[in-house]
Length: 366
Image 1 (cartoon, rainbow, N blue to C red):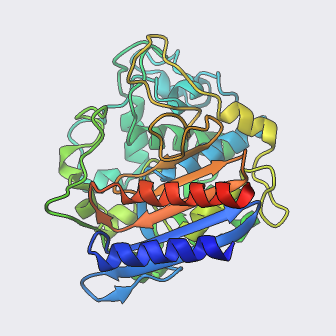
Image 2 (cartoon, rainbow, N blue to C red):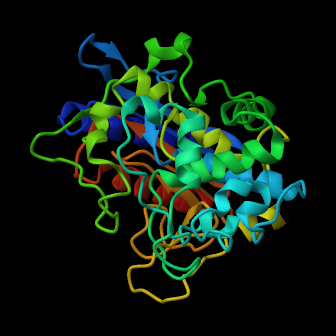
Image 3 (spheres, one colour):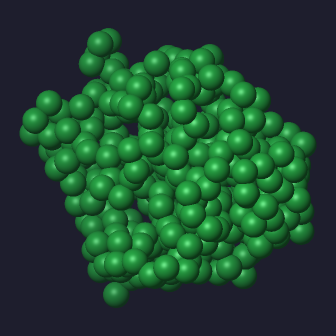
């Protein structure tokens, strides 16, 4: 699809020329083949370094998609069950009335544990042992499954520790060995190694177009002292921290390849999960107490629907990240899409790019 890549490249170039974006990447797989690998702009305004296909971007909650994939892989291997109480795997988690909280509740954001532990600091966020002990002591604010509230950061330690207890490996090692290596992915990290730091993009925010946190995000879900988030993730210690909800550093090319491997066609003969597991993983989840503002949420992935960056197809699944990074796959058209960017604004350019990709793919498939 050379026309698709050309159209995306022209749009990225124009967004940079117009001053709407500083630097960004887009990668698209169609039926298992990389059909768009485009980038534009500046990765670091301090050094003038240009964006390339190998530039790494902090992608915040796009990280949650990879964490979800890891948990689904363990489920596919019969190493855990979605409806299993977490305390069966992690006994300390039972403290303070959490015996009824299941893996499903953690994945669909109905565990009642969205608020972060109080009185933390930057050093503690990067201390895995400290954080999982603090998470295990949390008290849920409602019965499991009753309400849906976005677990912006706690999602990562809960599911990450489940993985560590079940598999025995530390989370970043599992990601590298089980998700990246089979696909030949080299640019997807949850905890940034020192040797790739020079390739990480510098984040910035438009003064006049600040990116607000989602309205449905409780004030305690993201501590005030890590805000604004772009400044936090410009800190090397924040990037080194293993936070499976938000500390991913990735290229669009790597993200799109991961998402493409979740489609039936796979990539180069490799699929991470079979179609039936994807069907189970992407069924829409609902809280016991209905809400007009309930997220379009499956087990760890957002899904398509009205107003979604993925379009309205309910079979599409993926995750967005604060600042505009996006990742999704659509099994109905064999599409996998990823976008990374380093200027935080509220212009909605990421949605325009995603819409253009969908429209051109639809035309090509007609």
